[in-house]
Amino acid sequence: QVQLVESGGGLVQPGGSLRLSCAASGFPLDSYAVGWFRQAPGKEREGVSCIRSDGSTYYADSVKGRFTISRDNARNTVYLQISSLEPEDTAIYYCARSMRRFNCLSTNGNDYWGQGTQVTVSS
Image (cartoon, rainbow, N blue to C red):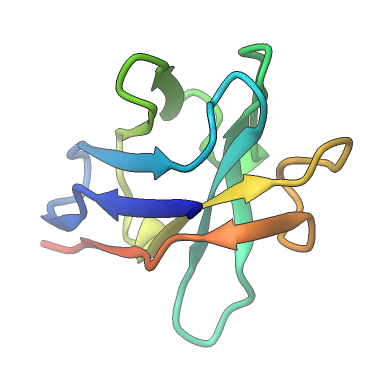
């Protein structure tokens, strides 16, 4: 019933931008927080950004000023605009639904995950 589907990843040069999409179904975005997470090879999955049901947003320090999270409630879709990209941003990017009252940047506070979309930053 609940489903999250990411799209928009790809190969991009350093300094470039992409817009990632997370299409949610089975629940309204004004009732749950949704976050973006990423995992690079050999690294732990980490929280990148999230948006709560009231529209408040949060970012990891490493992406502040470069990434922007937003949502379109009519389309039930959460977006992540990723800009000024660096090779260190290379990872699989996942979106997930955060459980209520949890820190939405925590990897342990989510009950549904998407399949991920690959972002590769390389010259």
